Length: 539
Image (cartoon, rainbow, N blue to C red):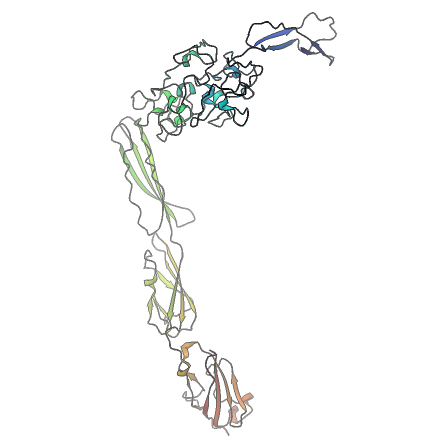
């Protein structure tokens, strides 16, 4: 039944009778053209209808399942729904893909191109559920082959004339068994058994019917594979495995790698791993720290070519903007008598040393130390030391003297920036008293204070452990028990001054004997106590 649409928006259906005879006939197509319409007011928008007739008893692949119920009419393992309806004919040979065992006419059966090379599963010839799909491809239930798309271009290999997109067609790469760039099996234009596979690719029997994989039982070994790695040639982007992709072996740039034979040995470069072109030695780029030994220049080794290569080697220092880092660029320009040329490079990135922080602990009673001895071995030692905290008494050139310093941390900067390498370091020096005994029993307390300005015994002093970082709390009493002086963290600065300058003459306490109590802040010792004589001349 055909439906035609008129210019008045109405439709008209016409039934075409078809007689079902007893003959088994393949799919037929014909056109119906309407003419002699009864009115000229109403016209048919399209007076032609296309009709496809499928014999409900016809069995294309001869598996005993008529095409109308066969889900894989050509028995290639790819479901008819994946290959398209009877209007899809990729290679235009008159056989729709669903009844064509070589849909793209490249000589490699769809059953082979539809599956991965490794893990290929040949048909078993069995169909337990009589649905037309070989048991080998049933999967979880009428699953069929999931077509491979090697180059990921959206066209499955069984419909793709160049499955790996390397510019050499599959009908060449899949049929060139002597690796000369010329296929040994070629297209003839004849198909004796009508299975869609050209007689040129049928092998010894051109009339073997629908043999889904024809003579390819093990694609990994039955199809050409020059390098024996990755995959067979029609799925290998670098057929000879020389590290140069097949499209890049098209030396004359005409888009056809099959006609390029650099060394003239009869094997095109894309199939010849030793085509006498120079091979990249693949020198690795290197990163070092300035001051480290620069790696020696590597040897080129055997890089090919048709003769002993002529080599021009250069090495250049390249500065980098905005940084003291730099590069060493090594370049090899090579050529041979065949006119082959190549350029190889190696880059050495030279980074400036990072700022080093050097931590030193030194005791206040230690001898002076030479800071140069603490620099990293790779550092230049001709730089300068600077600090804002110390004078020449304590830092003289590279010599650091701890004696007399407060117990704390000091920072000294080192810089050597005159050469190619820039060396910077910060010394963090902690002066401690770890080498001192610091026994409170060694504390010495003044016995007499004579306030006469002669610089001798003018002050009440606690001595003996000046470098031990002790603190003292002091209280002094007169003979009647009155507190006349008190200080926390005493600084050896009391010379008989009376409280509020109210006692005695000139603000000094009267001469006489006084009693002191000293508390040491380590908390471990009992307070020290005793008597002092204060000679002030006051009454």
